[in-house]
Picture 1 (cartoon, rainbow, N blue to C red):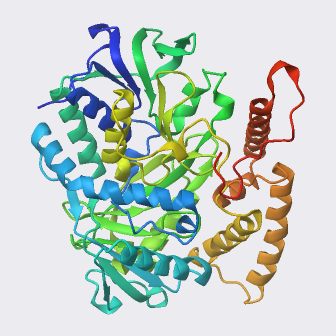
Picture 2: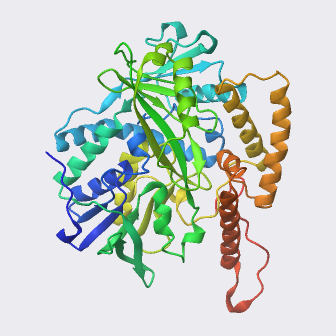
Picture 3: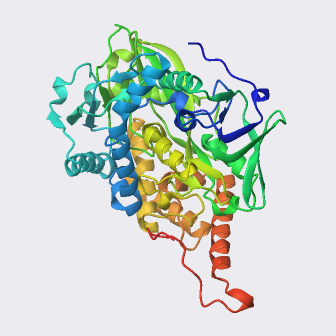
Length: 513
């Protein structure tokens, strides 16, 4: 069945408008259309700036675990959501294949995690251990393997892994095929596709009434869902009464590569390192026809990025051939893919009603939106339909105080460690004393920057690092923290102008409001 976009003139009134046609937006639109609702799905067909189109689509429930993630209530809650989503994927995949008429989108059988000397002890080693500990805690099978026995792996001798383990139940899917399956299934379910983005949210008397499209056309709807990734910020900004009380969205720009291998061979599983250097670790996985996917970088950017940076391209190519397979040097680069992960300024998802009745946000999922898509589609649908939800998402409601799961000292130290780790992964050649000197200097730089942003509130390490060289991001953080404090104080103001008894604390150091 060929995908055909319907025009806005098909209908002007819908039950739900979903702004954003990436994996999350399509999954929600499909789930609602299956229930018989009139749904309009908005977005450019080529999905510029979207994370989904450039994703490796690892169902990395455990492979993405870090020590920092599981050290807070917020991170543990997020991991629990990932674990629940993992259980939904087999049935979700079967239903999509049946409804779309396409085949299985799975491309990798299991995940092999390697620990090599390219990383640093404070990140790679501790995250390698944290992944194993969570696998044991959740009763998920894994087995240690000899690095020399890992099929297809042939790194430079100076980058060979010291140890490795295999997670047989953690697969990957082809993101492009998944997007096509979702599109086909959605049209089959009776959904309407409008091939342009929303430009503005319309609302009146505290309730959403619809959207205005980029063309100027108006769509009426009782519910509007912002699922346009990092571009959701443009839409929530059109609701100025609530926008300052929601963590602003920025982009985690990432570059990935599709490579045709010299000999036409591919690994059968994902091969990856733990998360490192502010990113999701180096990973290589099979696609089809002798192609492999190599990913991925992660650069915080206040605005979505459209074109790849030459430095990132060089970095990723060198990482793949040095750390995974030397013959990639002689392989053909078929495509460089750019995606923009939606990152809230406090690093956690924005899920739920957004301060105006009928206005919802389903974004800010950073690295695991695709993995979470079956679960979040089910949960957001239940809330829109007024049904009993299956999981508690209150911790990640959009209107909230800034979440800070670690102390300022811990965040500053993490930023230093990750930045220096990037030097090792880039293959720098410096005197052994220089990293120690750099760490000391960077600690002062990050501490001073954090103190300058706010007396107590501190952004995630990768955001703090990006702010080091981006005055615009510094201004955004200051404005966000000031608005958060003003909102907290306004909620404290007693009736009839009475004097407030002290300031209500914000959600710092892991304390939810």
